[in-house]
Amino acid sequence: QVRLVESGGGLVQPGGSLRLSCAASGNFFEINAMAWYRQAPGKERELVASITSRGTTTYVDSVKGRFTISRDNAKNTIDLQMNSLKPEDTAVYYCYAGAQLTGGGAVYSFWGQGTHVTVSS
Image (cartoon, rainbow, N blue to C red):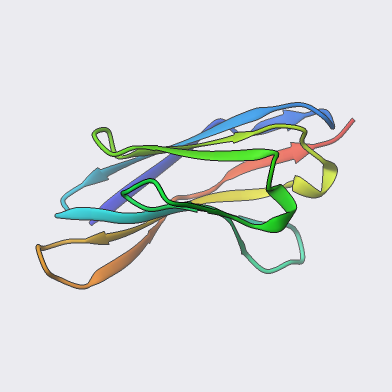
């Protein structure tokens, strides 16, 4: 199993910055992709940014140029640096990890508990 713990959410004014962090722990063979998702009230959960173990990143169009995802494979952590925040970025942000529990085994999905980000003046 993989446990994901997020931190760094909070209230910020429009144009401000926040940094989210996620740490993975537990018994697993390897973590493959990690990502940040978000879910705003009344909306479906959407992928914000992802990063592979080799460092390949993807971003949803609405955050390109403003958010940066990074990863430390040795520590099994990912961060999301969020700049120029907008009210529409308000959501619960969830950390995701796809992990193999055994070598050569299937990849399972694991989720954090979520951290709230509110962008408001």
